[in-house]
Length: 362
Image (cartoon, rainbow, N blue to C red; front, side, top):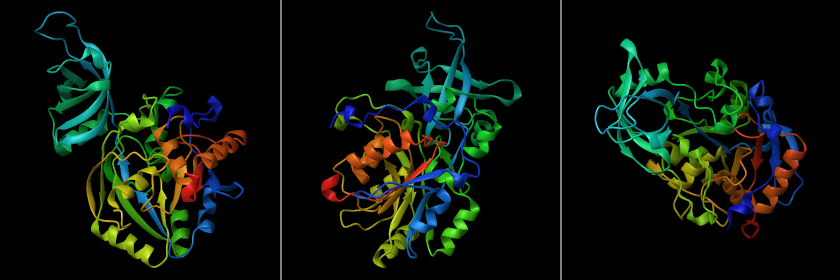
């Protein structure tokens, strides 16, 4: 497969800069391969689920992981010694005091450089411990554990996706808007955006419908925003992200399926985590590890029966994933319809409810 197989033209004005209000008033395109596309709103979701189905949410919480700082002047080595403004986007915690981060401008940094993200009595300093490709570095902070968490929360900004940040600055509204109502496990630098559409009322109506709610955790890294740079899709390598499926959740979801219910993943993050935790026998097992699963057409899904997800970037790994789930032809038609009828794209945009393609349609 070539990267061009997943390209399409997206008008700039299709990109949502603010979410719908209320959250569940966003549009919902229902996609059933072989059937007509259907326009609805997210608050209609209970109508498409059956008693005994299970909704699976990602309960990760977005942290203010974008930090502006100064690379301090070098005292040895000569040349380029003046302080340099830098920006870090934290994307994966390694130890209580170490984070992997994408740095800009990465080329101006060397191992051993000191970076000051806050001055004065409330300092937040780090040392560049390692450098990797693509501007990725390992930062060792002077603070650790909860003290570091407090420092990041105080001085960091909400890491809005680049296609929003390029059009407007982050503000106080984003602290609430870019967080699901059920978020509870700190660690993501990007929201599981399908979950942004849920309200407490919608969750209660789903439970009243007889749909069970289950929560897994996948901490979304900044790698989710990185473009695919290889022409041959199979050569792309995903960034690893840490996720957990508890034994209780695995048992509950296996019981749902044994009773004839469907597993409905809210977002590609919960889907990728469940697929990582599920064996060839379609049994979901406890999972606490990193996953770099890359799902493209031809993949055979083991856990997910239905997928709710927003509309994704051209040539992105997520558009490849939805094409694998509902079929390339079906998803191309769905996106053409969405663009033509004014659906809003990306993190703050509208949503879709996807049912799986037959095996020969993917």
